[in-house]
Image (cartoon, rainbow, N blue to C red; front, side, top):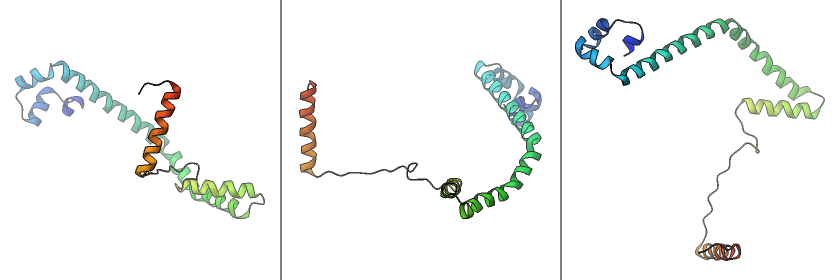
Length: 138
């Protein structure tokens, strides 16, 4: 299928995969094969377009990568030397964020609570009472 999607003839594709042209013709003319072939051609086209766009933006990308170290230095300098404590704090948080450290607000906490038999029975009783008050049948 890749051979056909990349523009090879049916004869060339059959030669590569070792299949007779008559057998390949039956497969190629099936609706499922045509759907998959079109999907693969679209993917190849999309990849080509993405690669070309990436090539055109490369000079800018390289230039921006050259600025990374200077930008990090600026943030560190603000953290260490700014007169405003708020600027120092924001700079420190920015460094932590870029390093992948989560703040307490962002951190996910998973806790498992194991209840003893008495506590479990108490919760079950309370839920039954609450259901009665709300009018939910048992």
